[in-house]
Length: 463
Ligand SMILES: Cc1ncc(COP(=O)(O)O)c(C=O)c1O
Image (cartoon, rainbow, N blue to C red):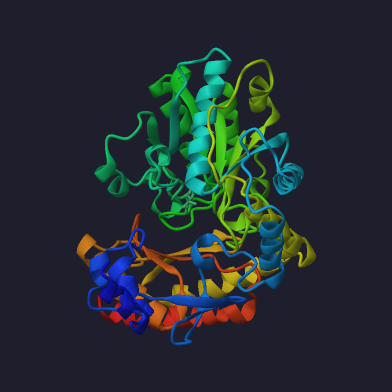
């Protein structure tokens, strides 16, 4: 940068400076050539504010993160206090008090014998760490041929090379091929678009989808499969809750073939579904839970995996060492923030509130089904997807060109302009995703419904 340019900087708007220097994630940067980059400067409760002071309802908790909402001084102060006391120390060979306290607290909250916590800084690192742990675990116990990982079509499990190999979205993988070998896809749990032979029977659909996992294990060779990665509610594609019996059957299949069940709860943990962990809502016992996002409500970055005693056993004896680590994992400030975040959960009974209010949230969103463009409203807890269709009766979806015009050309901007942060997504069929802070109540549900109603009504006129 030249010194003239540096001198100019302060006189430019933040939007212009963002356009010049900032590289936004998963963003078509050319779309901002003639438009302002949205700049969010402040948050308070369920709302965030832009540079002009305009208010937006944060219907996506940032990115499925801000469970307790914005602007909580007590959580920020916990981070500041920790930075003053001990800003940083690694978890390589050493421990520090906040990581110990947080690991212990997570072990108490997690289901069954998930008692060992390995911290990371993000969800992708958590997903990747679980794969590496599974591979090394099987080598250590004398099953070295197990390395493959099954996951669902469309499922997003992160962007680092290993996590991307587990992700089931071809478009975001192709530019980075070849990826690490071993990622195997199984069908998603999209009942709205279930194959004809199970389309009328949710239970049969769930059995079929779970049995597809068994078929994939047999096809690949059971001795080659290390783990199955599943989200409690599958996010990308638009919130697919598990059909009844799905996870019980998957658990049986995993046990039959000695395959690990990894519950990727990067979104679904910490109250999103009204429980600390999504697996608790649906009553299944994973071997590993991966988490990130809501553990700190975004006041600092943190992720990790919680591992069963059984998996830890070979690493706790003799010379075995999990040969993996990350400099900032379990950062003291993030761990202190996570503990303060969990204190808020307890003090305000956020899990109880989600469970009490989720019916009202669902009922409010379901009002939108009177619109021609709304094909399906699905989800659980404070986590919903609204699928848009061209024709409701036949469930016909939009062509790529229509989807581009509808989502990128109109909906994303229109919803933002109307004051709602949410996500218009076409990684599967076109959906709008909602995952608001867990403190939202009826007034916020109504505000979401009203904005969606008016913007979707306009969108329909463009089709
Ligand atoms: C289920 C799931 N796994 C992993 C990730 C990756 O997390 P991160 O973006 O923190 O790397 C995400 C991110 O949204 C996710 O939804």
